[in-house]
Image (cartoon, rainbow, N blue to C red; front, top):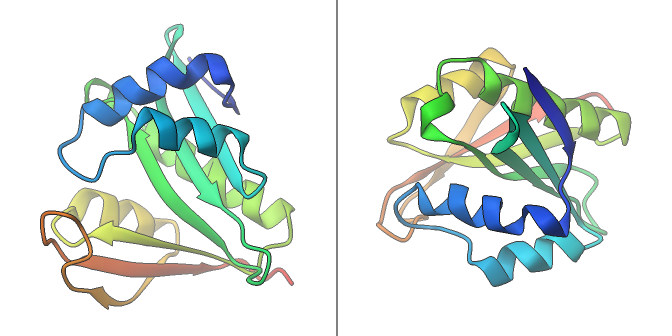
Length: 149
C-alpha cells in the first residue's frame, strides 16, 4: 500500500538514492537539502512497502501564481503499479487546493510514458525547449489549467 506525505530531512538518503537511479540531470544531496528547507518548494514522498519509493517536487513563485512540477521520480522497480499517477494526482490536488490557476512542467521529449501520463491527466503540450537537458535532449513544455485564481 502506498502512502503520500511531506518529505522530512530524514528522507534525504532515500531521495539521493532515487536520484542516482537516473542518468543525467540529477539533483545533488545539497540541492535536495535546500529544497527540503525552501519556503517555495513542496516536496512530497511516496512510501511503498515501508520505503520511500518516489517523490514529487513542486515549486511556487512569489510573482507567478502557477505552480511548477520540477520533478516526479519513481523507483524503476515500482513502475506499472499506478504510483506515478498517485504522485501526479497529489501534486494536482495540492496546487488546486492552494488556488493555483495552473500547473506547468517540462518533460523529456524522449519520454513517451511520462508524456502520456501527463496528457491523460489533462496537461497540454505548449511548446519545446531544444537542448534543455544536460545531454542535449529537447524538453516538451506542458500546462494544466486548474481554474484557480
